[in-house]
Length: 488
Image 1: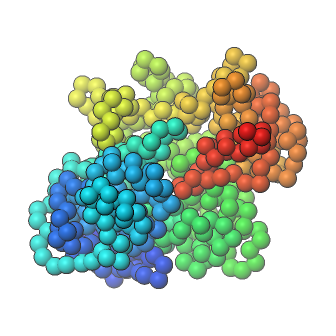
Image 2: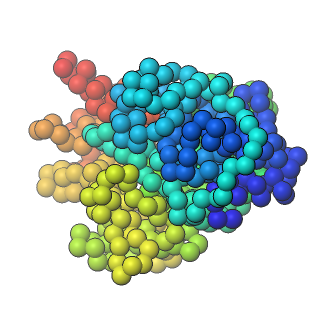
Image 3: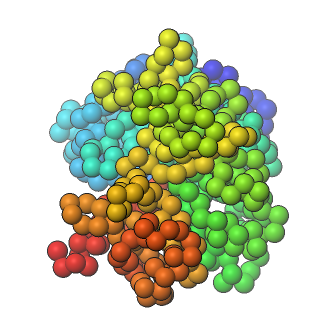
């Protein structure tokens, strides 16, 4: 398999009648999915989409997503899937940035047509018959995956077929999804962690059950039970919600056998609670980012013997740390996490300077991706995450990781979640927590966990932490909460 739609075609050959994807009331078998994507590819051609053209999809997760992704793959088009809650400002930036020939959305038609871009509703996407032409090349682009910066407009990672197919097979070789699995995916398909569940389901023969971000709440346990879910890809917010809900659930427990995590560090106490509530549950922790999809995966339950591990490098790749000059560091030395291998993507769309900074090429070999994250590797090659470069700040002249402080706060009994806002414009670092305890109780508890100089001088208690569409803590919204609390 060298192209992304070959994944669907091989699944259709091996498991034609097995369910491939369920979204809402619709289920497609592997054969039906491959056939629908082939006929939708013809429809795209009939609507003027050609090789190299861009398509933008803005819609809640549904079976339309894999159909369109595989259809775009067949004709060499480039597709960008955006979150269903994309704002008009963000969409305007994407449309101006990638200049698509087609927008598929139940909203924003006027925004597209003002730019002479064809817009169709999701129910207007159809199927046709006829030849779709020769396959694209493995080095052709398929995805523009837009990622949010902390202050700037979203930037797009260019993903060609080659690293996507490599990453899917490498990840599956370690996670080992089974053809009898049901993968419940509450993550948006605009988030690469969610999107790749489609491909992992196809290479393993498993069924992917599409959830919705809004279901990460009281209905989560019921959805897991009703779907028969055996695998749950989870960011910390999903795992924390599940750990909180399971003790209150009086019915049948979910049949989960595996929980995976990437996107942010998973609190150890949450994993302990989930293991206690779901005997037999295995956990595989991972580290990755859109620019390389996945960098490391830990063996099942490796965190029990090696706390803090994010796993070892994917087969066929390297992960190491470098100093500020780009020199490789040894075991135990903290530096910038760097990834090298066929999983590294092509760079940023129309951002040559940023691409040159992050995707460093040496002697014509695979590019080295400078991740912007700090960490260290132990003697066995296990990666330990410390924090983002922009998450490191100075307190009393000493370097502090916001990630480390947040983890210490979550270890205080009664703290459900925590986030640190690093110092900014003369304001010292602030810890924001969700708990029933008073701020001073939390700060006192942290003195048993980390050094005194690392503990922020101020703690703010909130009812909840706002989340992004991908289920991560929305730090901009937390900063706005702080301004409001200060009467700003």
